[in-house]
Length: 362
Image 1 (cartoon, rainbow, N blue to C red):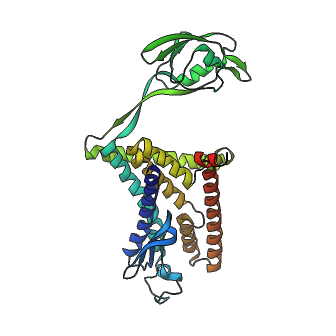
Image 2 (image 1 turned 180 degrees about the vertical axis):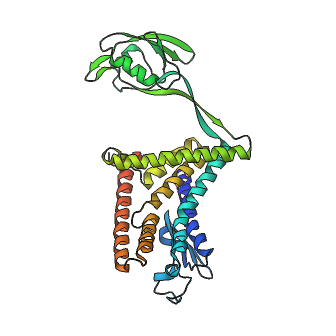
Image 3 (image 1 turned 90 degrees about the vertical axis):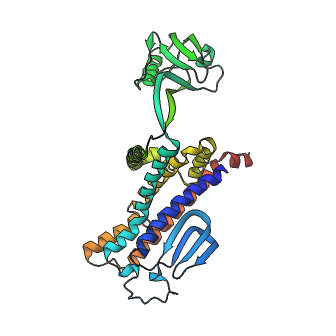
């Protein structure tokens, strides 16, 4: 059920995106002959007065179809309500409406999260948490009696507070004391312990074979009234938007290091399923995060994306006439093939990394 919940969230976000295009077109009187959620074989369809509404087999996608280039359409080619015959501004509104819809929807998802469930707040606590030990039972930390989830409150009479520098301070002490005993003050549940550990010498200094994490307490706080929910939702929206832009910037400037972090639909569903299983309330937040990313990806000036079509409109505005159809079609088809190839690659790669798939080949 958690996987279905994650897929449902993605399907809703895609539906919102395509509804943005559809509503922007119909509100201007522009002809729309197809509205489809998903790709592939049709599972259900309804023929309206002008538009065919359909649900297809694969929900991770969708499209709004216009009769402009439909050979079976009986609308005259010079009809002023065909999309291609509309002024540039009208077409730009239709093309960008999907992105705008995703951003607006993301904001209201965050408002709903704040109002109904609450936003998780991170409250720093004193000390550093031993997140994980090296798998070797004879490691330095294991021999010293250190256990996962232990909280190191101090080292060599140096206390660790909540400044955010505790992890680096502890690492520095460990690096600078290779072969020398370090006295650790540890909290383990209700117990206070004093342990001695001697870091082993490594190339970059001392090491005790542990993975560290900040000691924080996560608390959920709901808005006290609708106005506060709107304000907190706006703040969270801005924060996620900034982090997303920073992530894309890092991906572009350090592509070699960050390429492996690019997630496809399988990974996104896996993450969403984990959230649905462990913390259903965070699905609002997950949906907002994906919706913002979907909007930013679509506005990039890449062929076959909304941003690519807007780039063609910009060129048309500068030239005073559109690029030749054969050039536009060639660029869009090439871009579509590249995006499909990337999508298939990510699906195959991420599916092969799923735990149950790996067990099949063991």
